[in-house]
Structure formats: structure tokens, C-alpha cells
Image 1 (cartoon, rainbow, N blue to C red):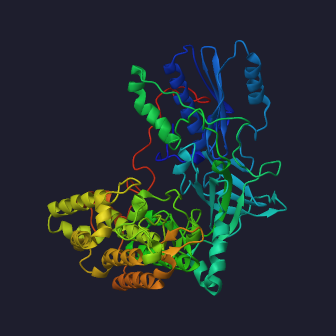
Image 2: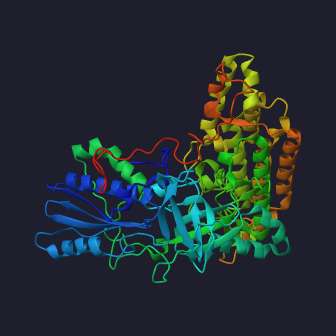
Image 3: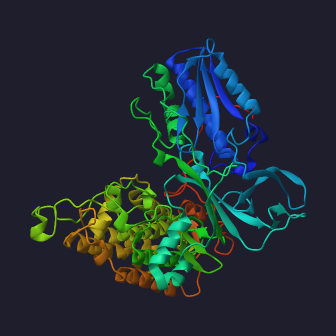
Length: 622
């Protein structure tokens, strides 16, 4: 089965997978182990279909153990399962299922009628064994151009299932395609995602931010993506595509067992659990799906094609990217919004406009509308430390509890705010200087001895594992860089300085962690204010000012000025030792933009699917 890191992308989806209407697993035995084995294989098959075929919205299936049959439905918000019944005694339900599989409409079977899978042609006009996809949205048609920019999240069944494509818009006349096929000029990007039902669309959030900025909206727009289309996908009957819940249905309760079979297969069951984004077995009393947890199918088209930090191959463009994203965060702070998902994947560089843009506003919210119950969002490696801990680091707890005396209470609720977004951008900066190494510096260091390069690589690798590869709750070294920043900053400067002997200002932004500490302490030592919901909160809106963003922006400008016209190409850290080969020189080496095993990115090792035989619709031996 193809996985996210395989060279083949979802354009290569086989005819067998696309033609698979439903899936089924059968075992003669009736034991718990038989049920578990069927569940694992059915999950594997559903994952394969939903990931490999962008034309699928959901998939149905059945499992049979002896004479007991269960119906399953795999959707992007949940997995449903019926109560098992004896189909020997009640064959009518099984007969209806077969009729549904043979004669049901394509949409009822789980296909997305707004996406068409079409054969692609090679440059010489000959057919080839790969496919493009044609998306219809808001009366406009877009055809994918190349493999997906991103699709890793679609590998989990219960997830946002985000797919991002570079697309070309097709010239149409009242919905009809011209013959021969014509494309409109200009690059565009299409994002297909399953958002929570009550979530605002990105275009709606962006409009609210610009409305709050008033006269500053025009200047702010250059630091955000230009949205051309943003809407919920419609079904053939005109209704919005929202994951349904069968009447009286419950979320699936996965079988658990302490048998020897389970101990041998625990890793396989874990793979199933990971694939479905950790959907846990529901308890019998409370496993009904809340309406707010249903997902809606959203499609957004952006003007232009940007590169994320992961894709940037030189320091100068990275600095421009971070500078633009810092300006975007400053405008969001002025509008009163918190992004909550600043990461290397959401910090984009526009090579046409030569400016950085901040993307993915789905989680952005007004700070004054947020509560302590908000779930964590974002990429762990770029989360602010306080956000990971869900606690204030500098708040003094030993104060009188009577707010009428001091204006403070001992336990103000933790609510993520603007400084946490800015800290996330600082972590993006630290990430880049750990995992992107100047090519010319390695070549020069090699002249002093290969062992020096190896030692430097090992030290940077060790440091990267201290600050990154962490979970959602963070770790000690990350916390220390906020609570006691100077030792950590000094260590990082000493570690990275040999790579930038001619450009000291490039490392100066790492010292910004000390300014962040001062800003955090200022906020948490100020008197609390009472919010409309009568809770006592930190005075974020009055203590976070534009001065901090101005200071950070000046550091970026100084770093850019130190480069002048130099681009300073970089290599991945994983390629650093390869450059020690005698055959590599500064004149012949090429920058490798292929992304590898790094934190904050899609899985840094291939996801392994279960080796339980082929999924339904595939030939044995393939």
C-alpha cells in the first residue's frame, strides 16, 4: 500500500482502488481475535481507499465472524458501526447491502461528484499511467498540475484530511469546457479540507481581521494569501457536504482483548489507532457524536503559489518569509486576533511578490472571545512553551485572593494570546538554523578537517533533539529557553556561530527569547482585569504593544542587510555529512530541496500499514 512518504503520490491511485465500491472482511471463527483481525484489515482497506483516491468522501464496509455481521461507515469525522446480528437468521439486511453496493448512486457510495479523475498525458502527448484531478467549485473548474503539495493528513481517516494542490484554472463557458482544453494564465493553489461544522471559513476569518484593521487593511493584505474561492462543497441535491450521523447511530467501539494474539499484534492495532487520529473506543453510555464534531467539506482556492519554510533553499528568502509573517502577526494583534497555529508549514514565501505571507487562519480567533477550555492547536515543535504547558510561567501565585484588594486573583485562567504566536515564529527561526546549514560554510570547515564537520553536525543534531522532536506537552530545554533564556541563547550562539562567521546578525534574532521573557513577565505582573464573562484575566490587550513586533522586525532587517545581495544557499542537516565527500566542491554541489526526516513536518519515517493481505479491490501479488 502507498503511504504519504512514498515517491508515488495520489495521482497514481490505481483503477482497482477507484473502482472499489465497498469493503468487506470475513472469518469463519467467532472469537475476539477474529473480530480484532477483521477490524484491523477493514481499517487498513478504508485508509488505503480514502488516502489514495481524492474522489472519495467516505466508504462503507462489513465484517463477518461466523454468522455475525456488522456494518461500518468510515467518514472524516468518525467511524460508525452497527450492532452485530446473525445474518443467517436475518438475511434481508445483507441483501439490502449488496443491492446498495451494486445499484446505489455514486454519491451514496461515498464518491465526490465535484472531483473528476482524468488520465494525464506526457509531454509528447502520449498517455501515461498517472492521473490528474479536475475540481469543480463555485462554477469554476481547476485541474491539478503535478503531485500534491501536501496530502499527509489525508492518511488519517478521522482528520481534516487536508490536500493541497497546485492547479490551473480551466477556461469555461457557462460551466462547459472549451475544446481544445484551455487554461487561464496565472498560478493558483487549491486546498481541500474537512473542517469542523461550526468553524468559520478562512475567508470569513480574514474578512473579520481586515474589517477590524479599517484603514490598515490594504497594507495588511500583502502579508496574507489572496483568496479567490472559499466555500463548503455542495452535494448533488444542493445541500452542504457535512458528515452525517446515522439515526440512532453510535461511534464505533473497537474490540479489545488481553489474549496472546493481541500481544503479538499490539503494534498493528496501534497502527490502526494512529491511522484514525487516535479515535478511542467510546463508552456505551456516551458515544453519540456531538453535532459540533461533525465536519464540513471545504474547498479554498488561493492566488499564486508560495513556498513554505520547509521548501526554502537559501537564507535570504527565509528572512523575507519570517519578516512578512511577523508583520502579519502584528496586524493580527492590532485586530485583536490570535493565530494559534504558526508553524514552518504556515509561514510562506511568495517568490513573485518577494514577500512572506501567513497562511491557515482556520484556528484564528479574537482573543477576547477565547476561553480556558479551548483545545490545543498547532504543531508541537513550534508551539509556545506556555501554550504547551497550559499554564503561566511567571505569574506570582502567593497573593491575596480578594480581587478588590489588589486587582489580582491567584488563578487566572490560561488563555493563549498574541505573544504565544510571536514565540512560535521564533521557534520557526530556531528550527531553520538547526535544520538548514549554509553550504559554503561546510565546504570551508571541511578544509580544516572532516572531524570538525562531524563534531559540529553531531552537536547541532543533539541540540535539535533537545528543542524539537517533542510532544504536545513540550520538554525541559524548551521551557528553560523562556524561563532562563540567557544560558540557552548563549549555547545556541556558540553552537551556530562557526556556520556564520561573516554574518553575525543572522543569529541575533535568537536572543529575542530574552525580550519575550521580559514581555511575559510584564503581562503576568500586571493587575488583572475582569472580562465580560466575569472571569479575571491578564491585561493582554493593554500590555502587548507594537514595540515588540518593531524590535523583532528590526532584527530581521539587520540580518537581511548583513547578507546584501548574497542568497546564502543551504542544505538539510541530514546532508551535512554527505558534503564531506572529497568529490563535492563548492562549484559542483547542488542544493537539495527534497524534504526529509525533520520535526514539524509530515512523518519523518514512512508509515507502515498492516501486513494483513491485500485490501478489497486489489489483486494479490501487487
